[in-house]
Structure formats: structure tokens, C-alpha cells
Length: 374
Image (tube, rainbow, N blue to C red; front, top):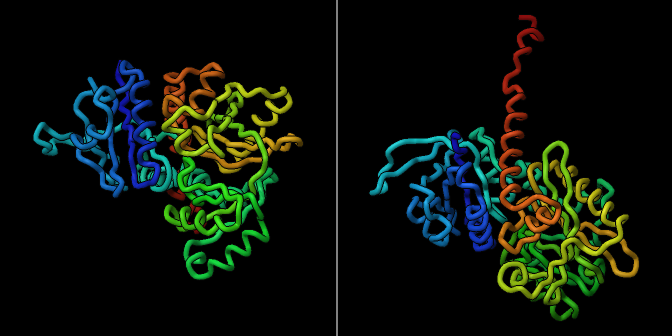
């Protein structure tokens, strides 16, 4: 059987660089080596595409054992070429890749940028396209779109970092007037809870904004509600399906970076203990959110379930959720009857299906001469 050549791209120019390394290592370990020839491609924090030898150094050695000689992707939007190197890192020939698997979290990987490169190169790739990725990354635009679609979201405001630097007092007054306390302050286009603070006292608000401003050009402030945190995984293209819901019980004030990727303080309850009517509603809203941004492949939709009222609120959609051994996305599918390795198989199948469907669209207007009377 001919193996599919899958390029797993990881790292990236993002505050979630380390998260990407962890996700890529987990995916590579789980991939069926009898089906796939795995090509690891690393991107540094500065955005430089590494040589093959340097790429392998970013992952644990046991991950890359027996994968064969790695190759590097040429970041050229006019080709889909990979360059294979000899033992002295001399380019010897170009080769194609069957599927690209971008395991990149945050800016320059999950925001539509690398997806645009794949589209220009006309190659299959795992996950959402340019539009959905961009919408999923910018939480401000995402929530405005959800609100327009009639999906429930919390009260929020957003502003540019330059606005904060010019008029901090005006921003503080607006936040306290329109959102109040307690509130969450976060970068608008970052995930994994990087740069997020929960603010309970007005004197701490400026420091929280300054922290978020270190990571992004746009900052959001959202109302904080007393709630349970529920997550649902979505899988598919034209007819997406939703997993069983899971619940996160944070070990700290909220589900932060350390809980997600470093310690085991947070408790993951899979499936979440919910009445059937709420399970169905979470799944329905997850699919609606996915379709609202025109998602494809995969996404995880994060919800709040307000205590006392059972009001469901969509927090955000993540178009490339964490894929480590302790990440919620694969765990939810495992609980729904789809093991990790089969989930990866399905994601690759969906990438190929989507590429075939897009290939059916014309790229030239052949009827134009007829319309012009020629």
C-alpha cells in the first residue's frame, strides 16, 4: 500500500509556540506509520522555516524515530514543493506532499495566513480554510458574527492597543461603565489562555490590560459570569457532527495555560454531567457556531453554562484546538467512540475530500466570449 505523505507543520511565530510543539509530538506519535510517511517541518518563533536537522531537534527524539529523512517546505505560494536534502544538507530534489497538517496555534498558523499559502499552492490541508480560521482567531469579530447570527455571547468591548496607549483613562472608564466587575481581559487573537486575567478590583484593571497588550494589537474585556465551563468538539465539512460535551473544573480561578498544558490541577469531566436536553442543545449550538464561520475539518466550541439559570453562552470557537495527550478535543471524540489515531485518519480524509470539492470549481470564465458575442 502506498503511504500518504503528510507534512506535519509545527512551532510558529506565536505565543503558543510551545503548545504547538506538544500537539505535534502527540499527533506524530499517534499517526499510523503503516499508512503515512510523516514529514516534520518546524517554524521558529521568528517565523524562519528551519533546516531538516534543526526541525527534528524541536521534538523529542522518540517522536521522530524511524520516520526517515525529513524534508523542508519552501514557503513559496506559487509552488507546493518540498526540498529533500542529503546528509550534508544540500538540496537534491523536490518532492510533493499529499496532505499538509498544520499543527500551529495562534497567529500566523491558526489565523488564515498559512491556510492562504496552502490555497495559493493548491494543496490539501487539515482544518478550516482562510475565512473560518481568520474569524476563529479574532474573538472580537467572531463574537460580533455570532451575535448577528442570533447565537448567545457575553457582553464585551474591544479596543486597539494604540487606543489604550493614547487614552488609558477613557478605556478604563468605558470598561467599568459597559462591562463592570468582575471581568476578563484578554488578547483578541490568542488562545490557550495566554495573556488572560480575571479582574475583580478596579485598581487591577490597568495591569491586566497592559499584560494583554504585550501579546496582541487588540484587547477584549468581557463580563465574567458564575458558570460551568463546557466544551464540545466538532468534526466534518458539509455535514459536521458534534461530540459529547465535556466539562472543565479549573484548578485555579479560571482554566489557564498552566492547567491546560503543564499541571493536572484542572479536572476534565467527560462526558459532562448534564441532562439530555442540555446535551442536545450544546451539540446543536456547537454545530451552528461551526457553520456560522463556515468551518471545515475540525473545531472545538467552548461554552459557559450560567449557574442558577442554565443559560448557555458561547465563549469562543477554536479552529485548531490543543492536540496533546491531555487536550479536551481528542478526549471528547474518544468518549464519543472515535479513538485518537482514527480521529487523525478522519481529519486527513476530510482534508482530501474538501480539496476534491474545491477542485470542482472553475478558475476561468469560459462563457465570457459568448456573453460578449464572440
